[in-house]
Every structure is written in structure tokens, then in C-alpha cells.
Length: 199
Image 1: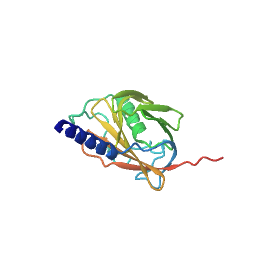
Image 2 (image 1 turned 60 degrees about the vertical axis):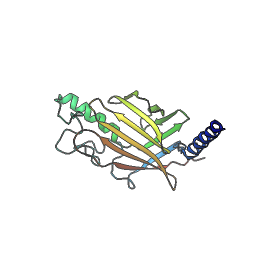
Image 3 (image 1 turned 180 degrees about the vertical axis):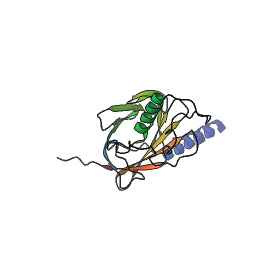
Image 4 (image 1 turned 90 degrees about the vertical axis):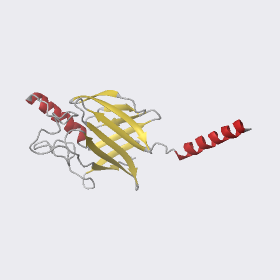
């Protein structure tokens, strides 16, 4: 009898936990960047590329933009070419896409960007390599409390965490935070509006 009661109790606990689990949101659709509603400007069209890459706290004017700092906080020597490639990669990763198309299923999610590239991410939280325009990065993507969280790791201990959240009325918010390196950077909130299909 005690074994049976214990089994029933375990089933009840698992059932409650299952009911409390928040299912993934449906981010599927085409989204347009709303610069006015977002924390920072930048349309991803190169408008911000002429000066130091500050982008709402992503980098500091007068320093190498996010480049060269390892996980220990010690500056690692970089050639001018490597510094430029590094800056281009980080800029690519933090600049908002003007238009974003998302498709998803139970095991993965895909993003189609302005330039036509489509990148597919597994949502099981396991590391995987991706070829960006300016380099190779490692990502981990998972659902957390109904939100999508994507972590992009660079080879010197710096990482970029993006959280994708649906808001009401219908909208998509992407909060981006740079982790590692020197100092703490304030997360940047980007807002996307849905692109309605026209008949």
C-alpha cells in the first residue's frame, strides 16, 4: 500500500510540474525592426559603421571594440587585420537586422536575414558551430520559461546572449547582452513589429 501511495504521489508531482512548464512561444513570421521603439538606433545597413562601435554600450569609444579581451580581462595583442575582423564579427552579431523571418518546429528554429542567409539552430541547448559572415562562432540555443535564449560564444571568452520574447500587442522584443571582457554592459532592447501578409 505504501509503495502504491508513493507511486501515486510521484505521478501527481510530475503532473503538476508538467502543467507548470511553459511551452515555447511561436516566434514564426516576418518581423520589421522598429528603431523608434528600440533602445538604440542602427538599421543593420552600415549606418553606424563610420565611428567607434558603441551601439548602446557594446564597446567603448577609444578602446578596441570588444576585441582582444580574454576571459581573464587581460589584453591580448592583436594585429590590425585581426582587430578589424574581430570588430566586424562583433558588429555583425550585435547590429539589428532590418527584416527577420523566423520559422520553427519542435526541435529547431531558423532565421532568414536581410541578405537572404538562413541559419538554423537546434533548441536543445547543445553547442553547435555556425559560419557567420565575418567568422565562425559557437552557439547554444534553448527555450527558457517560454522565451528563446541564444548564446553566441567567441573564442576569447566573450559571449553575446539574446533573449527573444513575444509581447502584447503582437510584437517581438530581442534583448541583447554582451558578457565577459572588461566591465558590465547594459542589455539593449530591440523591438520588432510583425509584417502583415498582403493578399
